[in-house]
Image (tube, rainbow, N blue to C red; front, side, top):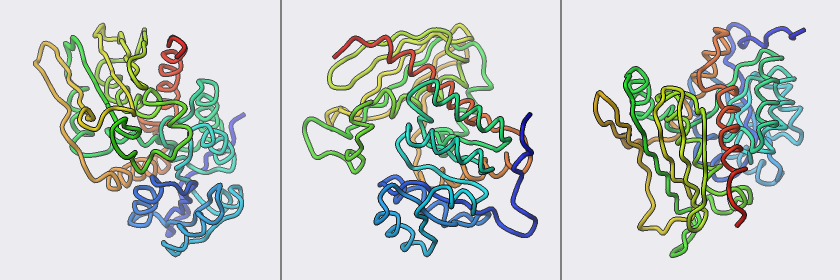
Length: 308
């Protein structure tokens, strides 16, 4: 039997949101967005490195937690800025404690763990949202909704070529990330490409994958609409070759993904979506269930890759 729904914060009190994680993403996006949000209270920080958690908490004048379960007990919702497989286990615990979940992508790097998060959210009746940048940033979020309303799609082509680990220059601020080094562009930026292709072209009905240079992975996808798409993904592109693009072609024409900016603002809109889902009880389309589906497609692709 399902437990009672967690529900919104009591009337007259803003929902309290805790942050788990202390890396560059937490400093640059999560913490600023949580602190600036007018409808939520940034309650505190927990991290695997206590000194880093204390530093981040001090910067925003919030409580530092030594134990994630203590943070869960004090919060209505929790935001994750952790490696995916650390996130997944803690998200299950947070849901059991009645916390709504603002997850990072990918939710996990195995289908089983991602499904466990989605099932925990369902069982404990907590809201969930996965922060997929293109689905919350503007104007890309509105562009995706517009394209999802069209029909007659024929094909799509996406590329996300990151220079996190470039062969010809200094690595990015996100390079000190063991999971990114181990899993590469397929898992780090693959969710972004799929988060646009799937809502527009339909669920993935078949996928094939192959390797290219560096950590390049190329996906060939067939969708429920009958359309075909491709995605080229990597984190190790030469700096001059780095970039992001996505093009859709169909009977209504050719449509290209616009540029976007203000990622902390996009994160604030993701929190808006979580708070709305918690208040209304209506699941968001970008919830843990959708995150689990993305993980299933990526895991199927990874299983087809030839050994390096």
